[in-house]
Picture 1: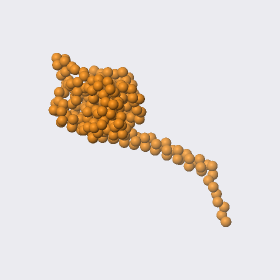
Picture 2: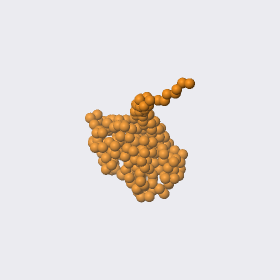
Picture 3: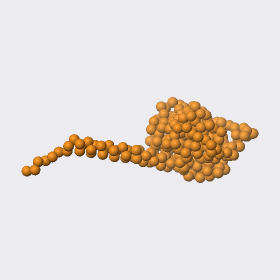
Picture 4: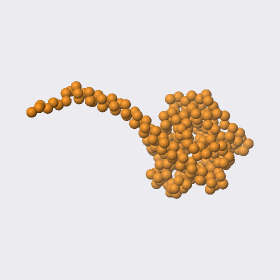
Length: 259
C-alpha cells in the first residue's frame, strides 16, 4: 500500500504567494471595471434628466424653468413628472428609491445629512430644502448650467452685460452648450475667469456660482456632462474651461487643476 504524502510547508507557501499575487493583479482591475460601470450608469442618468428637461421646455413655450426662490420648486422638482414620478415635486424623500436615484450619481457613496442647504463633494450628495418647498428635502449630485435659466430668483437687469450671456429659450442655445453635469451644488454660472479650485475633490465648498461647482474629481479627474443636443461626454476637469457655457463665452486652454 502506497503511503500518502501531504503538502509540504514550502508548497503551501508557494500556493498562498501565487494567490496573493493574482489578487494583487486582479483587484485593481476589478476596481477600475466597477468605476467604469458607475460612470456609464451616471451618463445614462444624465441623459434621462436631459430628456426630461427637453420635455419640460416643450410644454412651457420652449423655456427652461427659472431659478427658484425660497419656497419655490427647483429644476429637480419640475422635471420629475417627465421622468415618471409626480410625487417627487412635493415629497422628494418619498421618491428616494425612484426618481431621486436618477438625480444621484452611483459614484456618490455618502448621503447628505438632511440640513436644509448642504453642499456636496465628489462622493457626497447635496441637500436642498430652501424655505420648505415641498414636504421633504431633495438630494442630488448633478448641477444645472444656469445660463439656460434667464428668469427666477436671481434677476439680472437687461442693461447688464451679464444679461446678454443668458439663453432666453432652449432652442437659442448652440448644440454644444452644457446642460447638466456632475457637481456639488444645484446650479452654477460658470465663467472663463473662474480660477481652478484648490481641492478638486470637494470643489471648494464655499464657491458661489462658479466653475468650482462642476470641478470635482468624481470620475477620477473627470465628470460627465450632458449637452443641449442631449449627447453625453466625459470631460476632464481642465476641459471644463474649454466648454461654451454661455453667449460670448471665451474658452480657456491654460487652466491647470490641482489634484
